[in-house]
Length: 145
Image (cartoon, rainbow, N blue to C red; front, side, top):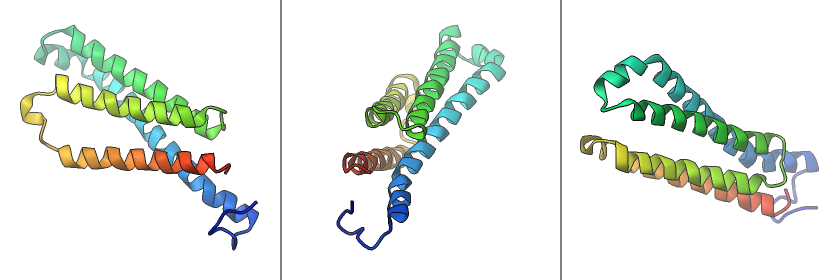
């Protein structure tokens, strides 16, 4: 079973080549899960300071909930790739889009106006790279690899 452009590879080399995209996606989701846990840790560690400088406890609860949710959801996406769940492509797309939408919703509604322009081009580029990575992974999975 060979694909065009991979005729020169052995079966073992082709499987290694095809796992590259899955492993890269898994790394992104694992890093996002760790970021969610670090966010939760930061909220718990700095709770008194956050309550002092914010308008209420709702922001602390939101930050803790968002960190926990992102850690769990991205962790599940990583597990779906690691253990080859049947619906892993759907999980990967869903978690990718959820994470990106959650970031932009938070940025638009919770950040102050002075913070909005700080790293805009970088984040847009990073999110486009992430969507591109997921698209390549999906394409690779649809080819039966």
